[in-house]
Image: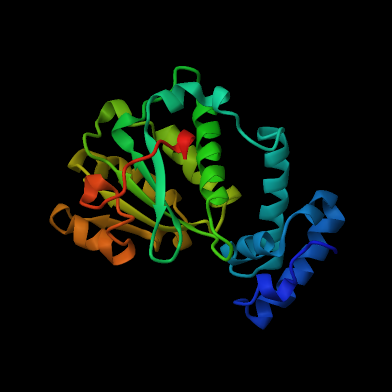
Length: 246
């Protein structure tokens, strides 16, 4: 179609097996949900990779995602006015890119509290954040890097339902978007909750999570992020920018 990139340029790093599975899956999902025609091959490939190239499983996951998106994000985007409570807590920031060109997000777990209005608002905030990160990815980049800073975290922040909801949205609706997650300043109490959450994390995601020791914090982050792009609070040069302003 006119205006569309050549499939090969978009998928130049795909294996032959992936290319044939992408064609199979596209035919399958377009027959069941015509809105599938609007998504690019990269999205189809992300869902396939999330299900180890199993076309049937990836298609079921993808069709479920399309249904979710229509009901949960009917306008195609989340407006900041819908998530004012979460934005007011200033708990997430986005600025700079790592050495691979992946946008960097920083989340402060001690600034998150269970919403008085139930879990829907936080779910919308998570979608808002993920969409922001995806919109900041340069051409050829599909992933982001995140730093979860758990300093000062306590039981008041222990929103287990919120954590599981956000994990579910990330894994089921934005597969293959997380490139790496550094968890820093994790207190002992947080590890108790982590043990509850851990079994719900799929194996692909588990491989991307790194707990960083305090004494190795800057050196570990510098392996992935240049000093000019590293947030000031971790010894770099990049000021924090609230996600709604990024």
